[in-house]
Image 1 (cartoon, helix red, strand yellow):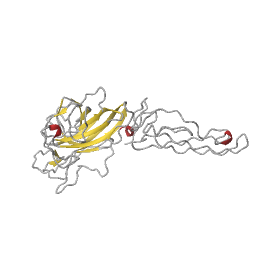
Image 2 (tube, one colour; image 1 turned 90 degrees about the vertical axis):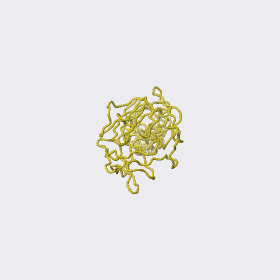
Image 3 (cartoon, rainbow, N blue to C red; image 1 turned 180 degrees about the vertical axis):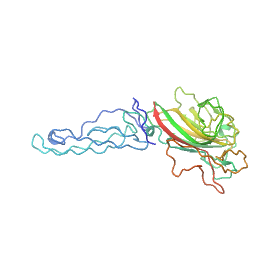
Image 4 (cartoon, helix red, strand yellow; image 1 turned 135 degrees about the vertical axis):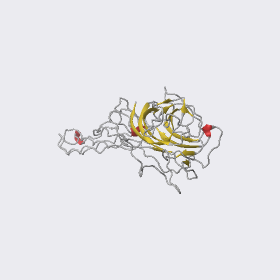
Length: 364
């Protein structure tokens, strides 16, 4: 997505780049004999900077820079219009006005007014589809095999935090190091539930439902059961937030203290319910500029329930997968996405768990 964020007073940087409201550089567009463009007139205005895209310089269109000034838009501005040749007071024909100077790349991703943008702070999390990917191995009627990103075996460690499989996706945070940003997002999808202890659930419902479960939970630890987790780890930990010291051991897992959030903390008996439920979350979490967001799926027995509908008989075919209502949801769907979401497998397709993110804005 590409949308302007809320207007803020602080100037923040693009990914791993410093930012300041710099002073304009000296004018570079002087004509000869003291005249630029029209005799005795000002130099021509630079064209408006285009709306940059991507991690570096993604904004909603900065203010046009004048010729010879340094724009902070993060991408080269369109060259300024060439001044009409004129006659200087000395009778000599003046040279055409110079084109506007290219903007500095230092303030990538800044919107007008210096507000942070989604694209400058968490570009890869926006529109990210988090999939509990089924491995190309034998499963069952209702469960598909889940293996780690690296390796093809399922760990049988007696340490629950090392057992099973881990699927990890890392997203770098842009902005200014030491500055706190708040990621405001919506998420939709289909996942199994999990019980976590010691955290704070976002929702107040007392039982899971079949329309849209708010599975957001702040802090706490997973119960050491076979039901898989959906974890968001934020490093470094944000001051004022509960610090997590979960001892995940996989090579790609976050190490050391961080903040942790969960997306499948459904109300009721989530552990032990062999079913996948619709997920509908609108929440926020803070991050530090220059930090890391790590998404972790931990499946301790390397088997994840598929999106098979309400029939919980493990011997029944996966023949009634649900569809998630995406009406009004702002995320850009992945190319070729259709519901019920499935991945190829022989003899029958897999219907894995999934969650799609729409980062709606960044605030401070």
